Amino acid sequence: MAEEEVKLFGTWASPVSRRIEVALKLKGVQYEYIEEDLTNKSPALLNYNPVNKQIPVLVHNGKPVAESLVIIEYIDETWKHNPILPADPYERAMARFWAKYIDEKFWPAAMKIVVAKGEEQKGEIDEIQQQMKNLEGELKEKKFFGGESLGFLDIAANIIIWLVVAQEALGMDQILNEEKLPVLYGWLQRLLDDAVIKECVPPKDRHLDLCKVKFGSSIASK
Amino acid sequence: MGEEVKLFRSWSSPFALRIVWALEIKGIEYEAVFEDLSNKSPLLLQYNPVHKKVPILVHNGRPIAESFVILEYIDETWKQVPLLPEDPYERAMARFWAKFCDDKVLTSIWSAFIKQGKEQEEALVAAAENLKFLEKEMKGKKFFGGERIGYVDIVLGWLANLVSIFEEIVGLKIVDEGKFPLLYSWMQDFAEAPIIRDNCPPRDKMIVKFQALLDAAIASSSSSSK
Image (cartoon, rainbow over all chains, first blue to last red; front, side):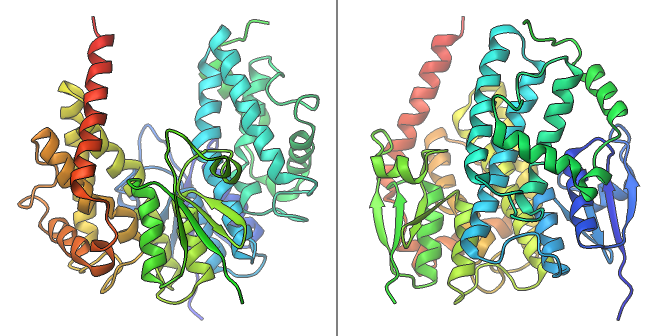
């Protein structure tokens, strides 16, 4: 059988890059990781993703795949053990629907919160809390969105970890906490406790520092 | 076995039209429920409480929203006439290009239509850059799916009928045959495919609708400028 060559172009603090690391580790796939400097993109990255010029890019036996959710589905279809997406088409549709929701609604909302101020920030917080309540409706009483083990939507929802780190960096705790969102909060603790996820989050101190530098001028008025 | 398939759509939504095409191509029997989006039915709001939009596919009572998600569900549930390729790498390419079509091509062409002045100029430049990537991806195939219509063709299908409507209304060329010969010829082939030709909203009604949208956009932008 031909030797497999798997490379991942990513950055240490990017949630979408870390998603791919989770997927590869869940499947036990060996890969070479290349850290990109986005202010000085490598010729290899520009060659492998000329359309969007973004990370993450997975290169499997020389063939590149871009867009994190597309990459995860590719990984799931190529290495079939430890499935990431459920088997049932309706369950798959639900996982894809909510993953899209996270990328298209939740993430932009999270980006707005960290730069908004005062009343505007309060409005953004209300909005994102409603979004998280919607996600709780999908989680219900399960351990993870994927059931007993991590699935597609848990991986996509890793962005929530980034939100709470930003929240902590800004000295806030009112966006996601146990009181307001007990079901999602419980899921988050289980996620943070998971052995694979632990290997795929930025080192906390470095991440907090980065958030303070990026968003530090927007401390919410109490 | 009784299958019940309903599609909540509007007469003009290009996103809902994707699902019509997919169902027709696969020969799936379904009931079309036409919504008036200015007066959404309680059923629509119940089936898609998060986005409150069409299309919604309801299969044996279970609703699915978001056109890409619905297309993949249809392909996995009814396996005849596959829309996505079989090979995982080819599937990844199809999904990548579909996302590019909505995120970049649709967004830039819509801006080129609805905006004015400098914003319109910039949108036209962006649209041309995006179309260049698509032109290259055609690679001499008849359709993005190869010999027959596939997932990417269905996702991009709005280009085949809406772009000429936009061009007529604003008097600008967006997909120039000289600059994008492969795409241009794809637009003709796609629009002429029997299932597509038989399932398109009436052109005159579309012109009225989009002219009205443009008039409203121009009115609101001039009322907010100093």
